Length: 383
Image 1 (cartoon, rainbow, N blue to C red):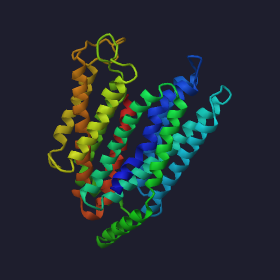
Image 2 (image 1 turned 180 degrees about the horizontal axis):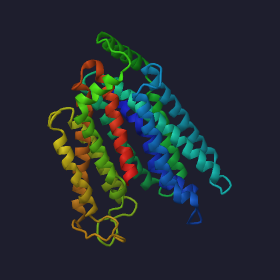
Image 3 (image 1 turned 135 degrees about the vertical axis):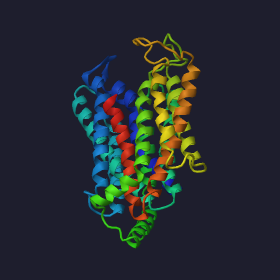
Image 4 (image 1 turned 60 degrees about the vertical axis):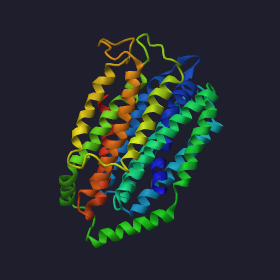
Protein backbone atom coordinates (compact mmCIF):
# COMPACT_ATOMS: atom_id res chain seq x y z
CA UNK A 1 0.00 0.00 0.00
CA UNK A 2 2.85 2.39 0.84
CA UNK A 3 4.56 1.55 -2.47
CA UNK A 4 1.27 2.21 -4.27
CA UNK A 5 0.99 5.58 -2.53
CA UNK A 6 4.48 6.52 -3.64
CA UNK A 7 3.64 5.52 -7.20
CA UNK A 8 0.84 8.07 -6.98
CA UNK A 9 3.08 10.63 -5.29
CA UNK A 10 5.71 10.40 -8.03
CA UNK A 11 3.59 12.07 -10.68
CA UNK A 12 0.61 13.69 -8.95
CA UNK A 13 2.03 17.25 -8.72
CA UNK A 14 3.07 17.17 -12.38
CA UNK A 15 -0.23 15.61 -13.49
CA UNK A 16 -2.09 18.32 -11.61
CA UNK A 17 0.09 21.01 -13.16
CA UNK A 18 -0.26 19.82 -16.75
CA UNK A 19 -4.02 19.28 -16.34
CA UNK A 20 -4.68 22.78 -15.08
CA UNK A 21 -2.11 24.54 -17.30
CA UNK A 22 -4.41 25.30 -20.29
CA UNK A 23 -7.02 26.96 -18.10
CA UNK A 24 -5.12 28.48 -15.17
CA UNK A 25 -1.92 29.50 -16.91
CA UNK A 26 -2.84 30.01 -20.57
CA UNK A 27 -6.40 31.35 -20.18
CA UNK A 28 -6.42 32.89 -16.70
CA UNK A 29 -2.89 34.29 -16.50
CA UNK A 30 -1.63 34.91 -20.03
CA UNK A 31 -4.79 35.82 -21.97
CA UNK A 32 -5.96 39.44 -21.82
CA UNK A 33 -9.53 40.36 -22.84
CA UNK A 34 -9.82 37.22 -24.95
CA UNK A 35 -6.54 37.89 -26.79
CA UNK A 36 -3.72 35.41 -26.28
CA UNK A 37 -0.40 37.07 -25.47
CA UNK A 38 2.95 35.72 -26.64
CA UNK A 39 3.23 34.06 -23.23
CA UNK A 40 -0.06 32.21 -23.78
CA UNK A 41 0.96 31.05 -27.26
CA UNK A 42 4.33 29.67 -26.15
CA UNK A 43 3.57 28.39 -22.65
CA UNK A 44 2.47 24.81 -23.47
CA UNK A 45 5.40 24.24 -25.84
CA UNK A 46 7.83 25.66 -23.30
CA UNK A 47 6.21 23.46 -20.68
CA UNK A 48 7.05 20.33 -22.67
CA UNK A 49 10.68 21.34 -23.14
CA UNK A 50 11.29 22.37 -19.53
CA UNK A 51 9.63 19.18 -18.27
CA UNK A 52 11.05 16.41 -20.45
CA UNK A 53 14.70 17.42 -20.76
CA UNK A 54 15.46 17.66 -16.99
CA UNK A 55 13.47 14.47 -16.32
CA UNK A 56 15.40 12.46 -18.90
CA UNK A 57 18.82 13.88 -17.98
CA UNK A 58 18.32 13.28 -14.26
CA UNK A 59 17.29 9.68 -14.87
CA UNK A 60 20.45 9.06 -16.91
CA UNK A 61 22.67 10.74 -14.32
CA UNK A 62 21.10 8.84 -11.43
CA UNK A 63 21.33 5.48 -13.16
CA UNK A 64 25.03 6.12 -13.83
CA UNK A 65 25.31 6.87 -10.08
CA UNK A 66 27.06 10.16 -10.79
CA UNK A 67 24.85 11.48 -8.01
CA UNK A 68 26.39 10.25 -4.78
CA UNK A 69 24.77 9.43 -1.47
CA UNK A 70 22.51 6.67 -0.30
CA UNK A 71 19.34 5.64 -2.07
CA UNK A 72 17.43 6.99 0.94
CA UNK A 73 18.77 10.50 0.29
CA UNK A 74 17.99 10.24 -3.43
CA UNK A 75 14.38 9.41 -2.56
CA UNK A 76 13.81 11.82 0.33
CA UNK A 77 15.61 14.73 -1.38
CA UNK A 78 13.27 14.98 -4.41
CA UNK A 79 10.23 14.58 -2.14
CA UNK A 80 11.40 17.51 -0.03
CA UNK A 81 12.15 19.65 -3.08
CA UNK A 82 8.76 18.93 -4.63
CA UNK A 83 7.00 19.80 -1.38
CA UNK A 84 8.74 23.18 -1.58
CA UNK A 85 7.83 23.52 -5.28
CA UNK A 86 4.14 22.88 -4.65
CA UNK A 87 4.15 25.17 -1.61
CA UNK A 88 5.55 27.98 -3.79
CA UNK A 89 2.88 27.35 -6.44
CA UNK A 90 0.16 27.46 -3.78
CA UNK A 91 1.54 30.74 -2.43
CA UNK A 92 1.48 32.25 -5.92
CA UNK A 93 -2.10 31.06 -6.48
CA UNK A 94 -3.23 32.60 -3.19
CA UNK A 95 -1.31 35.87 -3.16
CA UNK A 96 -0.66 36.78 -6.81
CA UNK A 97 -3.41 37.73 -9.25
CA UNK A 98 -2.85 38.10 -13.01
CA UNK A 99 -1.52 41.42 -14.28
CA UNK A 100 0.44 42.48 -17.35
CA UNK A 101 3.30 43.73 -15.17
CA UNK A 102 3.65 40.34 -13.49
CA UNK A 103 3.39 38.19 -16.62
CA UNK A 104 7.10 38.09 -17.45
CA UNK A 105 8.41 37.06 -14.04
CA UNK A 106 5.44 34.73 -13.43
CA UNK A 107 6.14 32.98 -16.75
CA UNK A 108 9.83 32.52 -15.87
CA UNK A 109 9.15 31.41 -12.29
CA UNK A 110 6.49 28.91 -13.41
CA UNK A 111 8.78 27.27 -15.97
CA UNK A 112 11.67 27.23 -13.48
CA UNK A 113 9.44 25.39 -11.01
CA UNK A 114 8.52 22.93 -13.78
CA UNK A 115 12.22 22.30 -14.50
CA UNK A 116 13.03 21.63 -10.85
CA UNK A 117 9.88 19.54 -10.36
CA UNK A 118 10.63 17.25 -13.29
CA UNK A 119 14.31 16.93 -12.44
CA UNK A 120 13.14 15.79 -9.00
CA UNK A 121 10.61 13.44 -10.62
CA UNK A 122 13.36 11.88 -12.74
CA UNK A 123 15.60 11.30 -9.72
CA UNK A 124 12.77 10.12 -7.47
CA UNK A 125 11.12 7.82 -10.00
CA UNK A 126 14.41 6.26 -11.05
CA UNK A 127 15.48 5.71 -7.43
CA UNK A 128 12.14 4.27 -6.27
CA UNK A 129 12.08 1.77 -9.14
CA UNK A 130 15.65 0.83 -8.20
CA UNK A 131 14.52 0.27 -4.61
CA UNK A 132 11.48 -1.79 -5.63
CA UNK A 133 13.63 -3.98 -7.88
CA UNK A 134 15.23 -5.59 -4.80
CA UNK A 135 11.89 -7.17 -3.88
CA UNK A 136 9.14 -9.30 -5.47
CA UNK A 137 7.67 -8.14 -8.78
CA UNK A 138 4.48 -7.02 -7.02
CA UNK A 139 6.42 -4.09 -5.53
CA UNK A 140 7.47 -2.83 -8.95
CA UNK A 141 3.95 -3.29 -10.30
CA UNK A 142 2.51 -1.37 -7.34
CA UNK A 143 4.51 1.66 -8.49
CA UNK A 144 3.17 1.34 -12.05
CA UNK A 145 -0.39 0.90 -10.76
CA UNK A 146 0.10 3.95 -8.55
CA UNK A 147 1.14 6.15 -11.46
CA UNK A 148 -1.93 5.04 -13.43
CA UNK A 149 -4.26 5.57 -10.46
CA UNK A 150 -2.74 9.03 -10.21
CA UNK A 151 -3.87 9.77 -13.77
CA UNK A 152 -7.34 8.35 -13.09
CA UNK A 153 -7.76 10.47 -9.97
CA UNK A 154 -6.61 13.60 -11.81
CA UNK A 155 -9.06 12.92 -14.65
CA UNK A 156 -11.96 12.41 -12.25
CA UNK A 157 -11.04 15.59 -10.40
CA UNK A 158 -10.90 17.46 -13.71
CA UNK A 159 -14.43 16.34 -14.63
CA UNK A 160 -15.79 17.28 -11.18
CA UNK A 161 -14.14 20.70 -11.10
CA UNK A 162 -15.24 21.42 -14.68
CA UNK A 163 -18.85 20.92 -13.58
CA UNK A 164 -18.52 22.63 -10.19
CA UNK A 165 -16.21 25.56 -11.09
CA UNK A 166 -16.43 26.03 -14.88
CA UNK A 167 -14.74 29.46 -14.87
CA UNK A 168 -13.25 29.83 -11.37
CA UNK A 169 -9.73 28.81 -12.32
CA UNK A 170 -8.16 30.13 -9.11
CA UNK A 171 -10.38 27.92 -6.93
CA UNK A 172 -9.58 24.90 -9.09
CA UNK A 173 -5.84 25.62 -8.81
CA UNK A 174 -6.13 25.80 -5.02
CA UNK A 175 -7.88 22.43 -4.93
CA UNK A 176 -5.39 20.77 -7.28
CA UNK A 177 -2.21 21.92 -5.60
CA UNK A 178 -3.50 21.46 -2.04
CA UNK A 179 -4.20 17.80 -2.84
CA UNK A 180 -0.74 17.51 -4.44
CA UNK A 181 0.98 18.86 -1.33
CA UNK A 182 -1.02 16.58 0.97
CA UNK A 183 -0.14 13.49 -1.08
CA UNK A 184 3.55 14.38 -1.12
CA UNK A 185 3.54 14.73 2.66
CA UNK A 186 1.90 11.30 3.01
CA UNK A 187 4.66 9.85 0.81
CA UNK A 188 7.21 10.94 3.43
CA UNK A 189 7.14 7.69 5.41
CA UNK A 190 10.84 7.43 6.24
CA UNK A 191 10.57 4.32 8.43
CA UNK A 192 9.36 2.38 5.42
CA UNK A 193 12.22 3.61 3.27
CA UNK A 194 14.90 3.08 5.94
CA UNK A 195 13.78 -0.52 6.46
CA UNK A 196 13.61 -1.46 2.80
CA UNK A 197 16.70 0.48 1.70
CA UNK A 198 18.68 -1.33 4.41
CA UNK A 199 17.19 -4.66 3.36
CA UNK A 200 18.11 -4.01 -0.27
CA UNK A 201 21.65 -3.00 0.67
CA UNK A 202 22.11 -6.25 2.63
CA UNK A 203 20.88 -8.21 -0.38
CA UNK A 204 23.44 -6.58 -2.66
CA UNK A 205 26.24 -6.99 -0.08
CA UNK A 206 25.43 -10.70 0.08
CA UNK A 207 25.84 -10.78 -3.70
CA UNK A 208 29.15 -8.86 -3.44
CA UNK A 209 27.60 -5.98 -5.38
CA UNK A 210 29.20 -2.54 -5.47
CA UNK A 211 28.66 0.53 -7.61
CA UNK A 212 27.96 -0.81 -11.11
CA UNK A 213 30.93 -0.93 -13.45
CA UNK A 214 30.70 -0.55 -17.21
CA UNK A 215 30.82 -4.33 -17.48
CA UNK A 216 27.90 -4.65 -15.06
CA UNK A 217 25.91 -2.14 -17.11
CA UNK A 218 26.70 -4.21 -20.19
CA UNK A 219 25.65 -7.44 -18.48
CA UNK A 220 22.43 -5.82 -17.28
CA UNK A 221 21.42 -4.57 -20.73
CA UNK A 222 22.51 -7.82 -22.34
CA UNK A 223 20.21 -9.79 -20.04
CA UNK A 224 17.12 -7.60 -20.20
CA UNK A 225 17.37 -5.56 -23.42
CA UNK A 226 14.16 -7.05 -24.81
CA UNK A 227 12.20 -6.03 -21.72
CA UNK A 228 13.76 -2.55 -21.75
CA UNK A 229 12.97 -2.07 -25.44
CA UNK A 230 9.41 -3.25 -24.78
CA UNK A 231 8.98 -0.63 -22.05
CA UNK A 232 10.35 2.06 -24.35
CA UNK A 233 8.02 1.09 -27.22
CA UNK A 234 4.94 0.87 -24.98
CA UNK A 235 5.37 4.44 -23.77
CA UNK A 236 6.51 5.72 -27.16
CA UNK A 237 3.34 4.44 -28.87
CA UNK A 238 1.03 5.50 -26.06
CA UNK A 239 2.40 9.01 -25.75
CA UNK A 240 2.62 9.52 -29.51
CA UNK A 241 -1.17 9.72 -29.54
CA UNK A 242 -2.06 10.53 -25.93
CA UNK A 243 -3.02 13.20 -25.21
CA UNK A 244 -2.31 15.33 -28.31
CA UNK A 245 -4.02 13.25 -31.02
CA UNK A 246 -6.76 11.83 -28.79
CA UNK A 247 -7.68 15.24 -27.38
CA UNK A 248 -7.94 16.58 -30.94
CA UNK A 249 -10.42 13.88 -31.98
CA UNK A 250 -14.11 14.80 -32.16
CA UNK A 251 -17.21 12.54 -32.23
CA UNK A 252 -18.28 13.42 -35.75
CA UNK A 253 -16.88 14.85 -38.98
CA UNK A 254 -18.29 18.31 -38.30
CA UNK A 255 -16.14 18.62 -35.21
CA UNK A 256 -19.09 19.20 -32.86
CA UNK A 257 -18.44 17.27 -29.63
CA UNK A 258 -21.27 15.98 -27.49
CA UNK A 259 -20.25 18.44 -24.79
CA UNK A 260 -17.40 20.82 -25.46
CA UNK A 261 -16.19 20.84 -21.87
CA UNK A 262 -16.78 17.23 -20.80
CA UNK A 263 -16.28 15.15 -23.98
CA UNK A 264 -12.44 15.10 -23.99
CA UNK A 265 -12.29 14.79 -20.22
CA UNK A 266 -14.43 11.65 -20.19
CA UNK A 267 -13.77 9.88 -23.51
CA UNK A 268 -10.05 10.71 -23.71
CA UNK A 269 -8.50 11.33 -20.29
CA UNK A 270 -10.74 9.42 -17.87
CA UNK A 271 -11.17 6.54 -20.31
CA UNK A 272 -7.42 6.25 -20.87
CA UNK A 273 -6.28 6.60 -17.26
CA UNK A 274 -8.96 4.28 -15.87
CA UNK A 275 -8.20 1.42 -18.24
CA UNK A 276 -4.44 1.92 -17.96
CA UNK A 277 -4.87 1.43 -14.20
CA UNK A 278 -7.01 -1.68 -14.80
CA UNK A 279 -4.39 -3.03 -17.21
CA UNK A 280 -1.49 -2.56 -14.80
CA UNK A 281 -3.56 -4.09 -11.97
CA UNK A 282 -4.35 -7.12 -14.16
CA UNK A 283 -0.61 -7.74 -14.58
CA UNK A 284 -0.48 -8.46 -10.86
CA UNK A 285 -2.59 -11.60 -11.41
CA UNK A 286 -1.84 -12.60 -15.01
CA UNK A 287 1.62 -12.51 -16.60
CA UNK A 288 1.27 -13.40 -20.27
CA UNK A 289 3.21 -13.48 -22.50
CA UNK A 290 6.49 -14.32 -20.80
CA UNK A 291 9.69 -12.22 -20.92
CA UNK A 292 10.88 -13.65 -24.25
CA UNK A 293 7.61 -13.06 -26.16
CA UNK A 294 6.60 -9.72 -24.66
CA UNK A 295 8.02 -7.89 -27.67
CA UNK A 296 5.44 -9.43 -30.06
CA UNK A 297 2.27 -7.68 -28.78
CA UNK A 298 4.27 -4.56 -27.94
CA UNK A 299 5.38 -4.16 -31.57
CA UNK A 300 1.81 -4.85 -32.73
CA UNK A 301 0.70 -1.81 -30.70
CA UNK A 302 2.43 0.42 -33.27
CA UNK A 303 -0.79 0.03 -35.30
CA UNK A 304 -2.55 2.30 -32.80
CA UNK A 305 -0.72 5.32 -34.27
CA UNK A 306 -2.22 5.12 -37.81
CA UNK A 307 -5.55 3.94 -36.36
CA UNK A 308 -6.11 7.10 -34.34
CA UNK A 309 -4.85 9.26 -37.21
CA UNK A 310 -7.64 7.74 -39.33
CA UNK A 311 -10.31 8.61 -36.75
CA UNK A 312 -11.91 12.08 -36.54
CA UNK A 313 -8.65 13.81 -35.66
CA UNK A 314 -8.16 17.45 -36.68
CA UNK A 315 -11.27 17.35 -38.88
CA UNK A 316 -11.06 21.00 -39.94
CA UNK A 317 -7.55 20.90 -41.44
CA UNK A 318 -6.86 17.25 -42.30
CA UNK A 319 -5.97 16.00 -45.79
CA UNK A 320 -6.19 12.25 -45.13
CA UNK A 321 -9.64 10.62 -45.36
CA UNK A 322 -11.48 9.60 -42.19
CA UNK A 323 -11.92 5.82 -42.19
CA UNK A 324 -13.31 5.41 -38.66
CA UNK A 325 -15.96 8.10 -38.49
CA UNK A 326 -18.13 6.71 -35.70
CA UNK A 327 -16.94 7.94 -32.29
CA UNK A 328 -17.26 4.46 -30.79
CA UNK A 329 -14.31 3.27 -32.89
CA UNK A 330 -12.28 5.97 -31.17
CA UNK A 331 -13.63 5.28 -27.67
CA UNK A 332 -13.12 1.50 -27.87
CA UNK A 333 -9.71 1.98 -29.50
CA UNK A 334 -8.66 4.28 -26.67
CA UNK A 335 -9.85 1.71 -24.13
CA UNK A 336 -7.80 -1.06 -25.78
CA UNK A 337 -4.72 1.12 -26.13
CA UNK A 338 -4.96 2.20 -22.48
CA UNK A 339 -5.42 -1.34 -21.17
CA UNK A 340 -2.50 -2.71 -23.20
CA UNK A 341 -0.37 0.27 -22.21
CA UNK A 342 -0.90 -0.39 -18.51
CA UNK A 343 -0.65 -4.18 -18.86
CA UNK A 344 2.44 -4.47 -21.05
CA UNK A 345 4.33 -1.65 -19.33
CA UNK A 346 3.75 -3.42 -16.00
CA UNK A 347 4.98 -6.72 -17.42
CA UNK A 348 8.12 -5.05 -18.78
CA UNK A 349 8.83 -3.27 -15.50
CA UNK A 350 8.25 -6.52 -13.56
CA UNK A 351 10.30 -8.74 -15.88
CA UNK A 352 13.40 -6.55 -16.28
CA UNK A 353 14.77 -6.92 -12.70
CA UNK A 354 13.82 -10.64 -12.65
CA UNK A 355 15.79 -11.78 -15.72
CA UNK A 356 19.14 -10.46 -14.44
CA UNK A 357 21.28 -11.74 -11.53
CA UNK A 358 19.96 -10.46 -8.20
CA UNK A 359 23.08 -8.33 -7.72
CA UNK A 360 22.06 -6.36 -10.83
CA UNK A 361 18.34 -6.08 -10.05
CA UNK A 362 18.62 -2.48 -8.81
CA UNK A 363 20.45 -1.43 -11.99
CA UNK A 364 17.84 -3.22 -14.12
CA UNK A 365 15.00 -1.51 -12.22
CA UNK A 366 16.57 1.90 -12.75
CA UNK A 367 17.20 1.08 -16.42
CA UNK A 368 13.51 0.18 -16.78
CA UNK A 369 12.54 3.55 -15.29
CA UNK A 370 14.99 5.24 -17.66
CA UNK A 371 13.37 3.51 -20.67
CA UNK A 372 10.00 4.78 -19.47
CA UNK A 373 11.34 8.34 -19.41
CA UNK A 374 13.18 8.06 -22.75
CA UNK A 375 9.99 6.72 -24.33
CA UNK A 376 8.23 9.87 -23.16
CA UNK A 377 11.11 12.07 -24.32
CA UNK A 378 11.35 10.46 -27.78
CA UNK A 379 7.64 11.01 -28.30
CA UNK A 380 8.08 14.65 -27.37
CA UNK A 381 11.00 15.12 -29.81
CA UNK A 382 9.20 13.43 -32.74
CA UNK A 383 5.79 15.07 -32.24
